[in-house]
Amino acid sequence: MDISDMILVSIDDHIIEPREMFDQHTPAKYKDRMPKLSQTEDGKDRWECEGLAIGTTGLSAVVSLPNEEWNFDPTGVAEMRPGCYDVHARVRDMDANGIFGSMNFPTFVGFCGTQLAPLKDNDLRSAIVSAYNDWHVDEWCGAYPGRLLPQAIVNLWDVDAAVAEINRMGEKGVRAVSFPETPYVLGLPTMKSGHWDPLIAAICDNDMVMNLHIGISFGLLLQPEDYPKDQLIILAPQLSTITATDLLVAGVFRRFPDLKVGLSEGGVGWISFFLDRLDRHMSNHRWTGLDLGHEGMSPTEIFRKHFLGCFITDPAALKSRDRIGVETMAWECDYPHSDSTWPNSPEMVMAEFEAAGLSDDEINKITYENVGRFYGLDLFKDVPKEQATVGALRALATDVDTSTTTKAEYRHRYEAAQSA
Image (cartoon, rainbow, N blue to C red; front, side, top):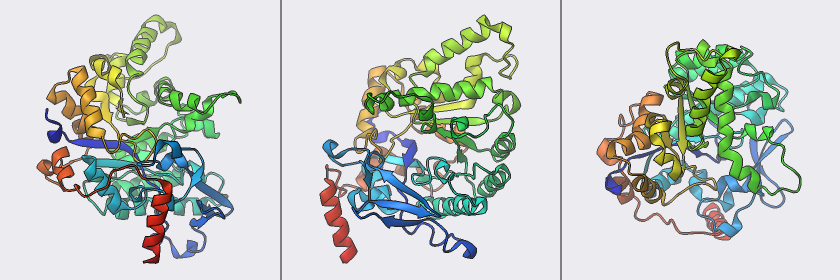
């Protein structure tokens, strides 16, 4: 396949939410209580609400910054590439990178709304969730139909409210819900408890995918004080093994045989060993009586029915694709995080495809077809397929500057634009 003919859909990118996001979506009774973006004395941004203050860490928005400026320190939009928070600039950056479609996770509320936990008013929490979803669907994704793929968050502390929000989002055509991959780390009930069954039933009824992004599961790791952050960064993808195991042993797929689960930012290299171990366990440890559901299907077949994993770069896994199952693999860019391959994603992933000897059919499955099938999306409903290729998109963005740019330069541009 020629690289210009490839179609790329990323199912894991992120938004740095803009200041005005709640302006059009706040109920009158909560007008003075919704989160507001403020600045600290040193110019860093943070969202404040009812005593809650949430900032953005530097690694969440480092795209195009020089590597020596990367860190975990709080940051502000003035020091970011505009594509982090401006939807028009984002789509231009997608064009420059040859990316057709993108599914975005939140930042300030957490990947799945977990940052709202400290709020004491549950009704306010639900109002924030609904306002966030309406902004995300109507404004962010609605600005470029077919290019930005919506997903919802829910109030994790009120299952009835969560079910109602899932149904509301389903009516809007949303096909994904972001949920914590290990809720018990937050002190919430496990997937085995049955507590979440009404929520899962609503997800299935609306033909949605439950997206589980790594993040909360970091709480399972006991990091020695003298270890560097590198330990967590390196281990991150392997936490998806815990997520998959939790769901399988909890009997979730026995109770919900149609549930679909997206494993976000977890890579796919771990899956081949995991399937070997799972098949061996179900044979060797029959004495436990574990029932995964789906009588007559092997553990590998059950996994392939329910899960879709995604990777940024995973050369070894591509060589094991027959064991993993090409139908369980998708791709992500992770813009604007530190693992992102922007603006050279097509070149990087194609080099791995070629090294592993993938056929054109296999490439198409991984880069967009699996996403359309798994999420139930007509990817070319709003944009013709011939306009979705790497070559066609990059031809629209020859003037986009993709060079490395410092925080100081971004701040200079931002302040100049604000004073214009």
